[in-house]
Amino acid sequence: MPPAALSVHLAIGQAYAWSVFKPPLEGALGLSGTASALPFQLGIVMLGLSAAFGGTLVERNGPRWAMFVSMTCFSSGFLLSALGVATGQYWLVVLGYGLVGGIGLGIGYISPVSTLIKWFPDRPGMATGIAIMGFGGGALIASPWSAGMLAAFGTDTAGIAKTFLVHGLVYAVFMSVGVFLVRVPPEGWRPPGWEPAVSAARRLVTTADVSARNAIRTPQFWCLWIILCLNVTAGIGILEKAAPMIRDYFSGTATPVAVGAAAGFVALLSLANMAGRFVWSSTSDVIGRKNVYRVYLGAGALLYLTIALAGNTSKPLFIVCALGILSFYGGGFATVPAYLKDLFGTYQVGAIHGRLLTAWSTAGILGPLIVNAVADAQESAGRTGPALYTSSLYVMIGLLVVGFLANELIRPVDARYHEPPAGDRTPVATRGGRS
Image 1 (cartoon, rainbow, N blue to C red):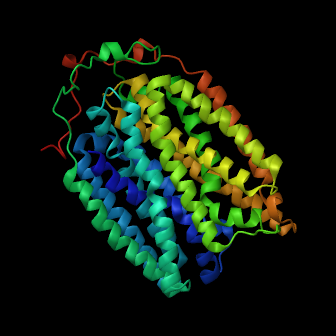
Image 2 (image 1 turned 180 degrees about the vertical axis):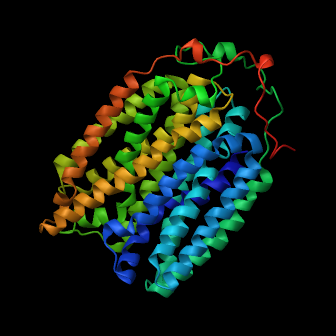
């Protein structure tokens, strides 16, 4: 099951390497930084919306159906983008990568999560970390691969179009592995020696179940929505603009950052993002979800403050802080399905997770908009270096503090939202992917 999940998530995780395409697109098509971020922003919006509306379909039709839909949409998005760049029609890039590809992102993102939780009910944090780790690590592959193709094909419209075309074809083949491998466990399957009642000893872990319809009526769901939205906003702003940001930050110093080194920085961030998803989510199985989110939000705010105060005085300090922030960012994504499972049970956790990802859609607009708009405004005012981003950093600190407070408000779900015992309700059908 982990290879099936990773084949999809490593592919759709390419979204985190979008910043590699920003400078070539801006040069070839005459775009601003804000405009070149639009496909990425729309892709994240569609990720959340398609996950929210498609979550119940994924639960009903199974992971194999979901992975096939994801593969078709994600690959088609690249092919449309290639056509758009080749013909000079930027709206086709926005439509392809953002709208069509974004649907593939959302359906693919949630496709293995509930399945892995069912295979690993004793270690839900580790299970979701395995799946979502691939999404964080996708840019680790895509960033140098994309940079290498752009270097070989060129950064004019023809070269960018060829790069998009290769991406679409290769990812279609890679993602098909997951379509063929995925399976769901038999009804009622449990790991040997594991008892749900024992695992529910923690206060926030329940053995009851809550439907997706009832979950969105609880304050716990909306507290988690706020937490995810603000944690993602704080991380995605840096990630979307990572390559140009580190170059701008140290442009006026004795050791400026070259284009190739900036692409390497994107790959490092991807590695931290990927590692954080597995390490921190697995840690949450030991210390609890609420405690680990205290780390993500509290320590993340302190790291942003360090970057803001240090400026461009130390490149290693900037890189270490950015890596820490991205590890918390990735950990937040990977831990939230297990947090949902603790609070709402496994009954419709995939559908609940899909609805929660609308927070990611919101953050996909807010994060890049804050960083790009502030940077563009500061650049128009004649400022350079860290001054382009200082205001954005303080905004991110404020958002993380609000998220920290929302996490403190989470309590066990009231019994009136619980579903009746399993024998007294109609089960959610799960067909696709069963051997």
